[in-house]
Length: 366
Image 1 (cartoon, rainbow, N blue to C red):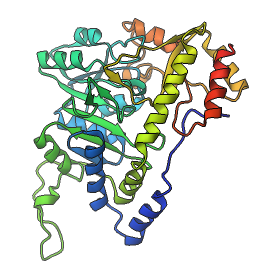
Image 2 (image 1 turned 45 degrees about the vertical axis):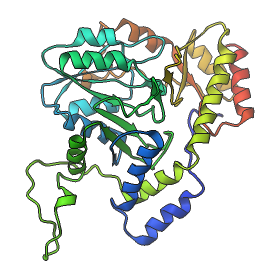
Image 3 (image 1 turned 90 degrees about the horizontal axis):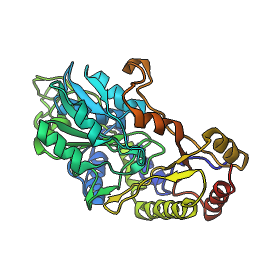
Image 4 (image 1 turned 180 degrees about the horizontal axis):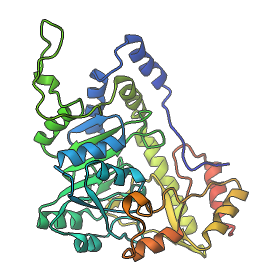
């Protein structure tokens, strides 16, 4: 069976991670700083703070944005549940806007309608790695004095109007979980446009202690006076070493994803029962997923499985969960999207033969 995802580990990772293990310095250190520097250089993104997961990246971003109990954060229901949980953990209220049927991304028109005096931030998700309409979302945020926190778990390497995702909004959150473009085993990062936010984030990720200005006393403990408690969110050095190794040939692997995606689009553009999603020149997708709308979805899934191909929705709407209050009745496009969206395998470890098999399986019908 050809799976939806694959975990890529560079051959050099064994040596680089082994060197960290041999050093016995396993916590946050020089490798974490090197990984942060590499992210900035590789993706042209400012001030990444390396963390232990994409979920904690969201939590830290919300904390830095000043989201407090009772505040409202407008977000998309088309995401993994971690996005909504991060909002709940701040004591805030996730307010779900509708989405675009032809991208799965949050609809700016719906966002505009959801704003109330309690709204403090917009949290868009770049579904499958395809950028949201950041011009309109940024304009709405500016008009109402809101923070923008991008959930870019799918979007490492994507760009919008030539600008890297990660360099547009107040905060952008990435994931380095096992099946993402770059894995650190598990991990994440939050990018900050503001140097002051970065400085605060660096403190918050390690209990709230400013390591850079808390020297060790003669007694063997750092000298500090903690005013605001933080978290234990930092990345460790052996995770960072794995991440550094996996960055080495990323350009070639990302190009492979783009090539496979292009082949799919060409092969499926005239297939009855399939509606491809929108793709615009100013949005360069990270191609984490290849999705489309399909008629008779369960028949499609069964047909693909019979031919050795996995097909999956990946994630259905999260607002259906009781912790978020259950399905809204004012999200008609999300309703439609939920009933017809599907994804087929897209990752850089697919062989040419496997790509051909997937194309043949889809075009054979269901």
